[in-house]
Length: 606
Ligand SMILES: Cc1cc2nc3c(=O)[nH]c(=O)nc-3n(C[C@H](O)[C@H](O)[C@H](O)COP(=O)(O)OP(=O)(O)OC[C@H]3O[C@@H](n4cnc5c(N)ncnc54)[C@H](O)[C@@H]3O)c2cc1C
Ligand SMILES: NC(=O)c1ccc[n+]([C@@H]2O[C@H](COP(=O)([O-])OP(=O)(O)OC[C@H]3O[C@@H](n4cnc5c(N)ncnc54)[C@H](OP(=O)(O)O)[C@@H]3O)[C@@H](O)[C@H]2O)c1
Ligand SMILES: Cc1cc2nc3c(=O)[nH]c(=O)nc-3n(C[C@H](O)[C@H](O)[C@H](O)COP(=O)(O)O)c2cc1C
Image 1 (cartoon, rainbow, N blue to C red):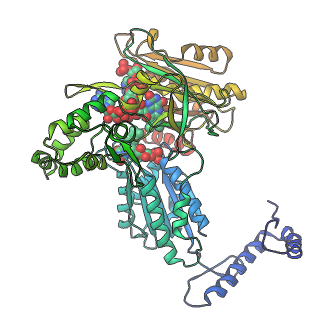
Image 2: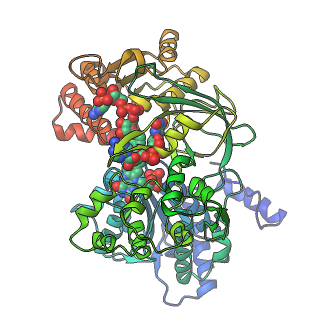
Image 3: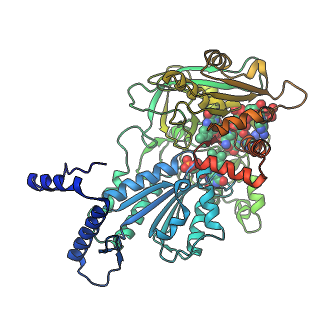
């Protein structure tokens, strides 16, 4: 790379001199010069004192730079990644030298060289690390993990308190780094779904502690925290997108109801790439809100304060738009126990009753709670103060911006079930299925996802496994590849219950197949035959060819159900590699881990 001094503190004459000499320097001369300047600067700031110095190539001694901060993130759907990048920018602005990396891109052996480590990690599955954190998590918990006496660290854990193993991955990292000898630079913060505020607080704490050790920084912490507020449309400032279309994709008689939703992004300036998701802030079912108000005999119009900023809303509106009322969590029960005279709720929280509490929380909502633990002594204001803010729902985007400018399409499966004698509705999916009409607006934001992306090389083959709503991002992939005229082969495995009623986007796949945008399509309709047929059965039937595609450099994607499908497809993939590659189970697993490392195996699962 040609070095040139352009925008610099030097005057024109100095810049010209530097630009004359820089191109003539050899690599080792450049290294010598940088060491020389660093050493000169160091001695002018702190004299020769007791500072630690290290030997540089070229024989010059230079100070050990303690302003280096490494930020590692483990993120499935982009939240932790976004926060890590934001933290990186803030630290850089404060004068630190920052490296922000996915855990899967970090060489664990380099840990010994890191002095200041920040970890931002979410939790997935049932308390397990996100895909890009698995190998680092394993390394750190294994025998080869190094002693880390020199390390200063802090962990920001993301999670959802409705899960049993809340923020488990962050907790694991935090405990293990301490066990290995690291010193906590700032305490771990465990964030629930509404993570913006605690994440900013954590960053401010980390910064002030880093700066204590490094008095050189000029940027006031408060300024840095306020910079976290974004100016364009974002998760904390969603755009009101107008509904353009809302169509049920399933035919009459289907057990399923999957809505194709088209929204306008016109005027928002929002952009996205295939593989990204859209976040929607939904509204609660008005009938459920009314039942709650009636049950508690609350005045729907009474004013309540809904957040720390002091925003005030009528109670009915607050319960409809601002608060989560359909999920019970342990922290909520702990706070609710102070608002009832019914001792049974406290009893549920007492040691030894953990299983009983877990069973109670499962499938129940706020209406159940207020019915089950009367009499309530708290006011409506006290009650709403203990509720979580309505979390957004993410949806894999099913369109390409290149093919549909100013629009975003989603594929939303309706969630309906019965629990504890009452019919229950998923908040966002049923708002979409039953109440959203063209012309209405919904608050949305783009969730970029670097971990689910088409190959950079449009000639690389892709294999897409997406049963049910899992097909969504692959519609976006196909639209994009058609638009850019990508030459790479592509293969879709799609499945759902019945061919006749549930073949989502059937005509579109078939057209792409005819036009050569899609090279192969294999379908598995699980309830059309006596024996269930799933996508992984189709993969097995095609194992030889599938392995050949992988050997040719194909990228493999899985999208859809996390609990069962994604695990089964993952195991089938290992079976196929074991069989067709003539490998042991262990080697086949390594093959898959290697694909993951190369970002050729990516999952968008929920
Ligand atoms: C990255 C990502 C991408 C996603 N993409 C899509 C997509 O493209 N399409 C799509 O449809 N969804 C997608 N989802 C899921 C989506 O975000 C929502 O979780 C889903 O629509 C349900 O939201 P809801 O508000 O309708 O239901 P909620 O009100 O959130 O209710 C769902 C909850 O109800 C409970 N529940 C559900 N069924 C039962 C049952 N039988 N018994 C007891 N409890 C039950 C569970 O706790 C479940 O988490 C995605 C999720 C993520 C994280
Ligand atoms: N975490 C969340 O908040 C959340 C919210 C909503 C939905 N989800 C999950 O997302 C999934 C998506 O729902 P969807 O309606 O699009 O599709 P789906 O329920 O996953 O069904 C699509 C197809 O996959 C089949 N299938 C079931 N188990 C499978 C397995 N182990 N391996 C492979 N295929 C399997 C189904 O067959 P059969 O039905 O015949 O078995 C069906 O043919 C749901 O299963 C649900 O679990 C999660
Ligand atoms: C399928 C799935 C499983 C999850 N499991 C857990 C869990 O076990 N514990 C937890 O605290 N949070 C869990 N979460 C919540 C996520 O950690 C949370 O949404 C986080 O903000 C995601 O961050 P990311 O986008 O960086 O992955 C789960 C989320 C999903 C979609």
